[in-house]
Length: 437
Image 1 (tube, one colour):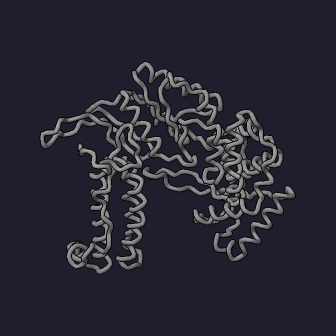
Image 2: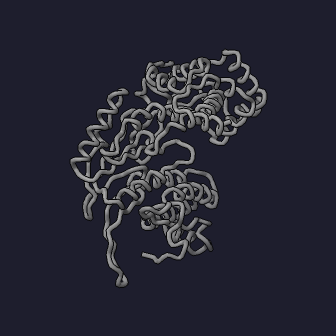
C-alpha cells in the first residue's frame, strides 16, 4: 500500500488524494501501528494506561474499538501529558515533551503509515530528518562532500521553537496541497487541537504540533517543505535535519546572502532562527569549528608521521554536549544508591555505550571513545568501593585484577570508521585493502 501511494504521488505531482481515511482504520495498518508503538515502549498518557495494561485489555479488542470509532467518526484524541525532560548535553535546561495516550499513539502511527508516502514523494534531497531510508549520517556525509569540493564557509542555525510555532491553519493548508480527504483532514485537526495537560489544566492553542507525538515529525517536514522548495542552490548547499540547518558556501558574501535568505524564508511561515545558535564561520586549520547533529566539525592538519605527507581534512568527533550527556548517563547508571550487583550495572552501561558508539563511530572519535570508556571504568570502580565500603583502590583492584574482563565492560577500540569525501559512510575505510592514511 505504501509503495502504491508513493508511486502514485511521484507520477502525478499535482494529484490530490481523496480516499485515504479508509486505509487508516484497516486492520493490517492498525496492527502495524501497534507494533511500532509497542516497540518504542513509551510512557502512559493522561489516562495512565500503560502498554502492559493495553495488552492485558486485549490488543485485538483495542484495535477493533479504534477502527470502529475512526470508521464512524466518533474518535476523539485525549490531551497529551506535558513533561519537562533534560535537554541532551545541556545541564539545567529542560525541554517540553508531550506524551499522548497509548490509543492516540496507535492512531497517529496509523495516520503516519498512510500519510507519509504521499508527501515523501515531494520531499527534496536537502531534507534528512525523520524520513525513511535517510539518517543523520547521510546529512553529515553531504557536509563532508561539499568540503571536499572546496566549500569552506558555513552558516549554521537552529529554527527557534519549531514544533511549538507551527500554525495549525498554515499546516492544514500545506497538507491540502496533496490531501483532500475531508475525514482525514478532520482527524488531523483533532490531533493538532487536542492540547496538552499541564499542572492539571488542559491548554489548547492555535499553534504547535506536540513534540513527542508519532506523527509530529512528518507534519514538521510537511510544514518546512516550502523552505526546501524555495531554496536556491546558488545561495549554497543547504542541509536540513528537522529544525537544524547548515549551509555550505564558497565565500563569505555567499554565506551572508544565504543567512539573509534563510531569515526571509522562515519569516513567511512565522518562524525565525535561534539567535544564540546562528552564526557564519570559515573552516580553517587552527580556527573554530561548529556542532551539527551531535558532532563537532573542525578543519585539522594530519601529523604526517612515518614519512607521510601531511594533509588537511575535515575532522568530526563527538561534540562537548554529547560527551557531557554520555558522562551524565553513565553517572546515573552507576549511582551508588542502586541496589544491584556490579555485573548488572555493567550490563546497563554496556547497553547505553553500544547505542552511543553505534552513532558516533562514523567519525574521528577514537580519542573521545577512550575518554568515555575510562570514565565508565572509573565509575564502576567507585561503585564497587562504595558498595563494599572500602577504599577507591579496592574498587580498582576488584575491577582490573580480580575480574578477568573488567566485569564484561565492552571495548571501544578499533571500531571507528573515519569518513572521507565522496565515499559512502556505510563502507568502512580500508575494507577493500586501500592504503591507510
